[in-house]
Image 1 (cartoon, protein in one colour):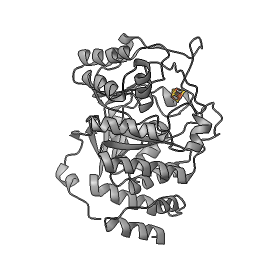
Image 2: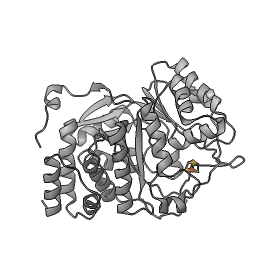
Image 3: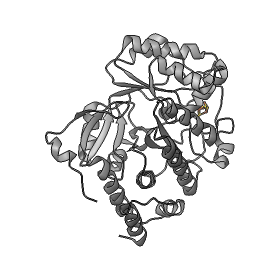
Image 4: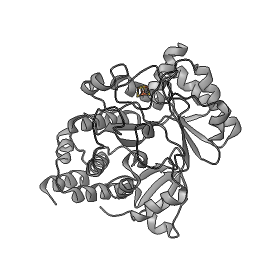
Length: 366
Ligand code: SF4
């Protein structure tokens, strides 16, 4: 083990916390497998060999958006051939047979906040058992401005019609330097964090993301994680951290996607830095299913879900499948040497796919 990994292990074993400098240094660590093994050990202390997944469906009701962020391949404008709007019936039809729906989209130029509330209410009327995770902080902020409501009022209305959690999108990377260049009209870190703080105060847990592999530096990745860690210390409302590998698409921001090595390092370092986050997710849609499977031994304990039909990353030419069956997810988790555990949107365990559950539940010594 390298001196850096050895020092990191000793800090963590003593219950200490990694600093910004240590986090940045880990990105330069050459012993990739050693880094992965250390993150796997930290993961196993919490989750043993569990690999979580969920039967979910991603719904992106429309790609119409009032903004045109430079890095985004998803958004469109009325009249363009790729613009679309789903009908309420199309949205409802996508909710069959899943446990969770994940709803995010563009900042729609004309749909009202009432319409989005009715969308959630209609889903719950048709599928009362479904858990709805919906709307990024950017969408929540947009609703509040359009409807002239406070963030609290928006969240409480959504909660009343079935919202149980917020997704983590819209954060991108908490760097003013990057924001000015890639998404100057979208909210920055303070507003994103404030909206999640309010959600947590109202009892709405949320998730968090980091978009990496474009023009951000390793320092900016670490700073992003540390801002999340700070808010989590205060609220304990985050369920998961999800590094999202940027899909280059047609934007020309970068010519190729981050390597699998960068993916695995980012997952591992997230697990080591975010000591107060329960879950680190390897999102197979952006990472690819094989790398996501390996990431389950690099600190991740979750691989997301069946998804159904993801449009945002696939608009940017993600070459992962549009959907994944339950059996394939189970296979990917098992191939990583982990035990598939089906969960719900709030990470309650639904089913363990292993005959020897007791052995799985046994804590693994550090
Ligand atoms: S990133 Fe979001 S806000 Fe920006 S253009 Fe795309 S959909 Fe709209």
